[in-house]
Length: 174
Image (cartoon, rainbow, N blue to C red; front, side):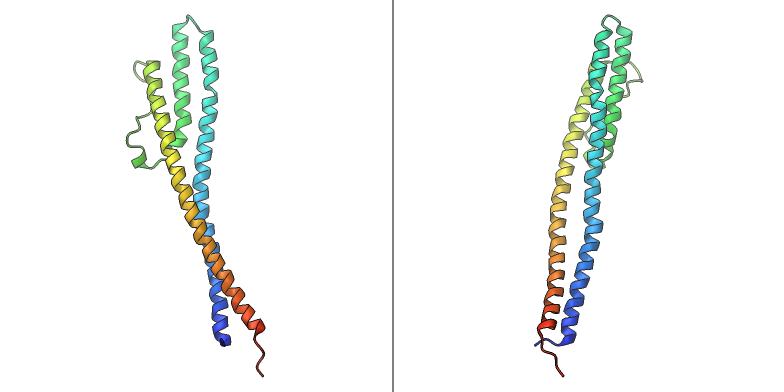
């Protein structure tokens, strides 16, 4: 039968595994959850800016015949879209941003709405695609991390339970 010191070592090892699983959860899993939350927040910011698009289009319809005012509304519309894209783009790694066109500056040079909006649309599609890929990688990592956490937690719990159960069931020696 096991000696008392061996059972104590098993119980202590189990407690250490439980502590390690808790630390693991608090660091790596929380980090992955924070990354997912940052993506959700950035997407929320973009959706807020995107919802303004209907207002820009409505104002533009009211300005029919006033080319200068229409141009100004479209300039602000592109600027608005770019403000919404910035938080999502900032979450991408440098290698993920490589072939994404630079943000359009609607206040420099000869502004042409159609070409500016086409670039902004290309940026949007690429940024959203890369962010979706990043989310998928984080979800996969979280899945692995959860498995490791549960394994550590299960082993630690089992070690503590087995060691203490054997201690409790062992007859006392006089």
